[in-house]
Image (cartoon, rainbow, N blue to C red; front, top):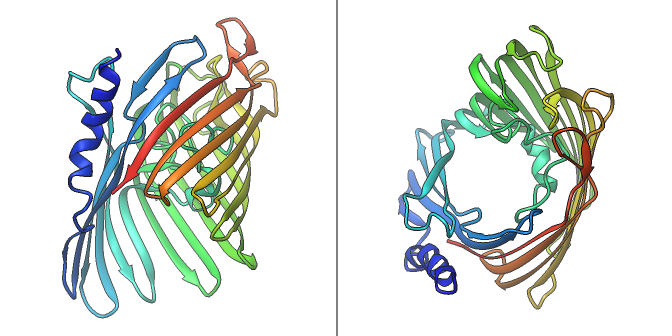
Length: 358
C-alpha cells in the first residue's frame, strides 16, 4: 500500500501532464476548430464503514469540433469520457464511461439545436450549486435514479434533443426525450419512460446576480414492481435558483420540488422538497474555502421517513487558479441511512485530492 498510492497518482497524472503544455487546439483555422481538454485527479476517500480508498476521482477528457457552414450557421459536436480506477484494480483494465456524445447546429438568429447525450436544460440552473469536488448535489433532483439523471433527462440526458436561445437578457432552453425502454432505475425497479419534456428560463436580476427556473417531466410505463406508481403516472421536477458570482465569490441556492421523481432506500417512489446551497470565496493567495449545504425531505409518507441532510466544509489551494489545485472536503451527515428495516443517522466522511485541468 505504501508504494501503491504514489504509483496510482503518478500513473494517472503522467500521461496528461506530459501533454498539458501543448495547445488546447488540436486544429484551428478560419472555419474549423478541434479542441481537446479535460482533467486528471488522484483522490483519497474515507467511507462510513471506516474503510478508505485511493481512486482516480473525476478524471475525464473530451473532444469537441466546431465547423462553420456559412456566416450564420455552425456545426458542432462533442464527446466526453470519464476514467475511474482504484488502487484495488489499478493493474486491471480501467473503467471508461461515456459522459457526453452529441452533435448539432448553432445559428446566430435561431439558437442552438443539439441531439444525443447532453446536459439537460434542468442543469442550466442546476449547475449553480453543483460545485462540490465530491460531496453534495444530492438535494436538487438533477441526479436521480441509479444513473445520476441520464434516463430521467435532468443530468446528462440520454437520447435527448435540446434547443437553447437567448432573447436579450432572457435565456430559454427546451428539451424532449422519446421512449426509454427497459431502464433499470435502481432498487430493483425497471420501467419504460416516455414523453420526457421540459425547459429552463434564466435572466439577470441585478449586478452579478442571476435567477432561473426549470421544469421537467416523464411518464412512467410498465413499471416493475410498481413501487408506488402506476402506468401513466408522471414524474415531475420543479427547480428555482439564484446565483451571485464575481471574480472572487460564488454563492448560489437551488430549491427543488419533485413528485415521484426520487426512489427511497426502501424501494418506493416519493415526493420530495429539497434545498441546496453552495458558496466559496477565492483569496488572492490561492486559498478557496467553501461551504455546501444539502437538505432533502419526503413531503409525504411513501419513503417511511427518509431524509437527507449534509453540511459540507471544503478547503482548496490553487497553485494556478482553476487549473492546478489540491482540495479537501468533510461531509457532516445528519440524514437518515437505510439499515434494511428502518432509517438511522449516517456517519461522517471526508476526502482529499489533487486535480489538474489540461
